[in-house]
Length: 256
Image (cartoon, rainbow, N blue to C red; front, side, top):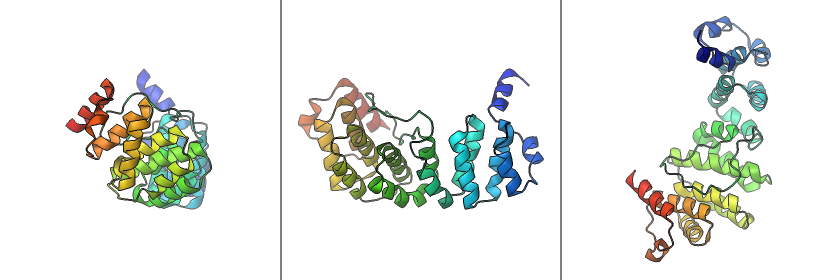
């Protein structure tokens, strides 16, 4: 085994022989194995737990997701949670903004030059994105009722990704209420502007145009990207204030 393969094993990469060793394990045995000191065994446990989609399994997987440090083991946990579908929504929502320290916390001053919706950095939000349409209503409830602004930001990311990627149409009322609730929170405005790339109603257009006119440079870039994706015609006088990067961003998105 070469050095690269050894490193992958140390990070929990499994093979067919590993999986075969635990194929006859019961749910109880696998839940014990999920806390093994060996990353490969934790990976195998997470994969085999797909055979037991129930609330207890989801709860234990979410606990493991909070603690897991090894890449392949973490990916296996996320895969099984995604396969548990609706059972996973509530426990994953409770983890939004709570795992790791890689969350986006500031407004980016550079544009996102891709047509696809950005994948959330938050591991819980990423996993929720894989659940698709069943997560839409629960995410709206979080955005409307949560008092945790960090969790709200991650929920908006997941919400926007699901709607945009699956071409799901929803009214923008949830995001409108959020903007009215936090009128001075520019970071949430930034998340809303990104999310609105999948909305086509009048409020979405007005919010994006106002942000393009009055927002900071990072906010303006995000609003411009959403407006360009929505193919909304911009007033000519607005273009006079575009920075070079804004011009490049608009052109790049239009070409794709």
